[in-house]
Every structure is written in structure tokens, then in C-alpha cells.
Image 1 (cartoon, one colour):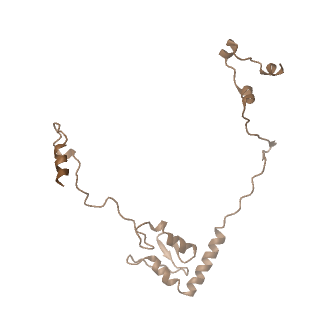
Image 2 (tube, helix red, strand yellow):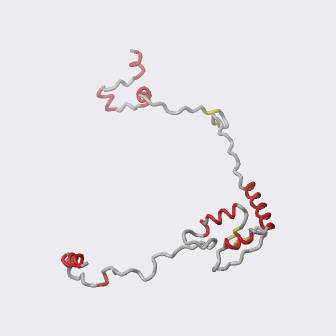
Image 3 (cartoon, helix red, strand yellow):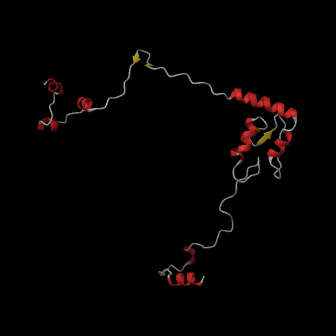
Length: 174
């Protein structure tokens, strides 16, 4: 109410020279058009997803009830579903699926899809890698102080200061 308006009247920003020009200020009214268009699925006429992400279409395609080629949809008998924006494509598919001939054709399509898209089993990886010349035996690197001393580089300054012996094999013998 009025307390809100009184608070904001007293807390106005100070104006600076040249700040009164309206071309630099942001409009405070809502935009006249929506910021984004709602996406509509033409298969089921819902607004939550596009046709290519429609779960109903995916299910019907896997059952062989409908085939999609580009933007055209076909019944299992090869008949094209005519486009009518007033009704979803799924209603035509549902009405046609009541026909036993269509169901028989759909079962054949679904069966061929399952055999066509069956994943091929991957052959097991051999335990050792073989090159054309020889077998390569590989072991993972070992951690620990002993291996660190073998691979650690003795710098010139360390050798001159005498902090480390340059011959590590002689130290182990003692």
C-alpha cells in the first residue's frame, strides 16, 4: 500500500546530468509478445515437448504402429497419414491399430527392427597386447620411496652441496 510508495518516494536515485534522457533507460512495462514460443508436438498435440522427443511416438515406432520418414508419417501398411493440424497424428494411428491387418503388419515391422538393431556382442579384450614383432608385457608404475630414488634426478646444486650421494647403488650395499 501507501507505506511501500512512501518508502520508494524517499529513496529515489539522484539524477546526474544527462540521465533524464529516456533513450538510455530501460522500459519497465511487460513485453507485448511472449519471450518464447510454446513448442507443440504434432504427434500428440501436447505443449511440453517437440515431435522428435515425443515418448508416445517412440513407443508406437518401437511397436511398429507408425513409421516416420522426414516429416511424413506412415501406417504399417505403407499408407501415408494425411496432415491435419486440428487432430494429432496419434489419433489416426490409434484408430488404424484397431484393424487386425494393420496390427499384423505392425508386428512384422517390430520384429524386423528388433533383429536389425540387435547389438552385436563385443569380443573380449586379449590379456596381452601383441605387436607385429613381439608380445608387449606392461606393468603399472610402482609407488614408493625406493622407486622415487631410482627415478629422481639429482640436480647439479644438490650434488655440489653434497646433500645426496650421486651413486645410490653403493649406499644400499652398506
